[in-house]
Amino acid sequence: MYRRLPWWKSMLRGIAIILATIWLIFPFYWAVITSLKTPADVFQLSFIPFIQFQPTLENWRTEITQRGREVFGGLSNSLIVALSAALLAVLIGTLAGYGLARFRYRHWKNRDIAMWILSQRFLPPAATVIPFFLMMRYLRLVDTRLALVLVNVTFTIPFVVMIIRDAFRELPIELEESALVDGCSRLQALIWIELPLIAPALVSAAIISFAFTWNEFLFAFILTYSRATPMTVVIAGTSDTQGIQFWYVSTRMLMAVLPPAVLAMTIQRYVVRGLTFGAVKG
Image (cartoon, rainbow, N blue to C red; front, side, top):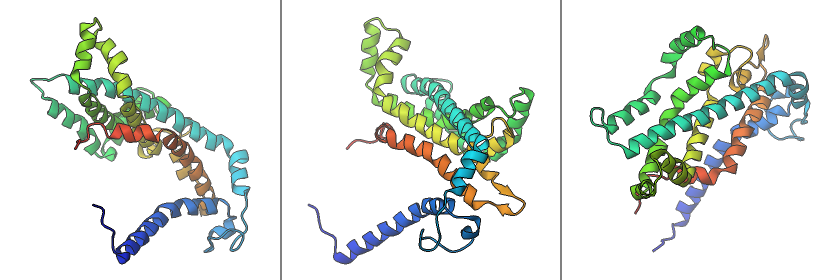
């Protein structure tokens, strides 16, 4: 039976929710109002447009007209790299997750294989920067999108494998056995029977891989310098001899946040469903 909370507990909970909401929204609010300020207004304590400062779209016009090649080049690089890394990670992770869910290995047990795959996320990325740079230089892939795709797939594939493995475990093995009895090969049963059933898990794995790749900075900073520079490096380079140009940083940050936010809101129901595969049922 539902018990109503005392008024003071309800009030404390409401205050906590309000404070948490302000804590989460304030960085975006700061970015919005800063992108609408002149350089002189940025260094003044002002938060209310039209009252404490006069909004202007000059920063946005400058970014689009004068610096559009750099900004939109960074956005396009980030989008191509993130989409390619997500698709490749899902492709490889689907095969690995299927193998861990449907087969039992003797000499190297499934649990050990899964832990080894997951351990790739435990390794500090900074410890692998120099080896990756040397390999990419040897392969002549420095300052290319392919280098960023390969590196990001390496570090995002553990999440993909774990999500898809649990999704395959949720499916009854009888579905695949029935398809095999009807004449399908194991690959046909995987493609035509099982993959459509775990589509939400595939989407959630792709979104997670996309988000990690979109936000990655360290390898992008080391492996690119002009042609393949993603948006994270473009934002970090918003400075001159006078210091950081916060009005341009906020403008570029909002541009960088918009694509993944729109994507996440569009398919959020698939993400929620995909992440609940393998959960304990009551």
